[in-house]
Image (cartoon, rainbow, N blue to C red; front, side, top):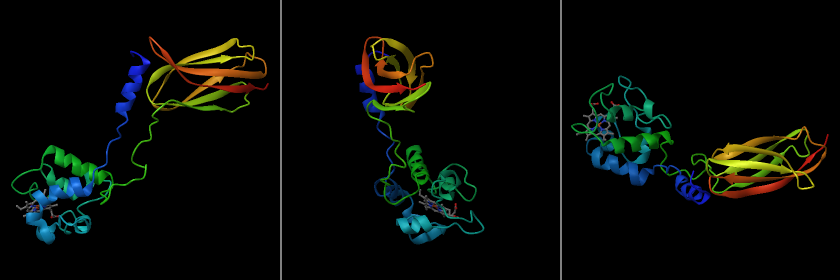
Length: 221
Ligand code: HEC
């Protein structure tokens, strides 16, 4: 770890969530260019367009005997079996050629994302990583004798929690490694008397440290 500025710099790049595959701009063109000539209108037991026909296209009972696309299950979709090497029935598609590794990967990802016609805008698919440190507080509070300090971190970094009593004397400190996302760290004050305590959390590196936040906790014995 070089310094905090670097850590923040990295955090900006690493957040680009894996974009979802869009049917109309990324998938439909693959079928139009490679499949529709032989499968338009459902010829040869497969319908490659438009979307509604593609998604309901079904393989005959003497072949796969199920829909060609099983949403969220690329590995179980006959369509995928047919565009990869050595299909269970017939020859690899497109007949007489093959799709690029990239096109095959896109089709599989699209199916595993649900084979939707429109990109889903809910955050079910995009993982929610924090873009900055956020102290969530500690619970329980009041506590006896330990409490859990929670914070969210945009990066994996070392951090330090320091606890002071009402006179400003340090009574406890704990160094740990934060993971990206939510972090829970237990602070134990069993050797301290009841009272109000203050804590500070800093992200630390070799050359600098940066404040995540501070708070107040009450020990009642
Ligand atoms: C040159 C014509 C041709 C092209 C282009 C072509 N196919 Fe086919 N396809 C066929 C023929 C003929 C069959 C039936 C024989 C077989 O399964 O090998 C078939 C069968 C299939 C089946 C199996 C249907 C079933 O359930 O029995 C699927 C799925 C399929 N093709 C998908 C595709 C996809 C996806 C593309 C484009 C990437 C494509 N095909 C391009 C001619 C073609």
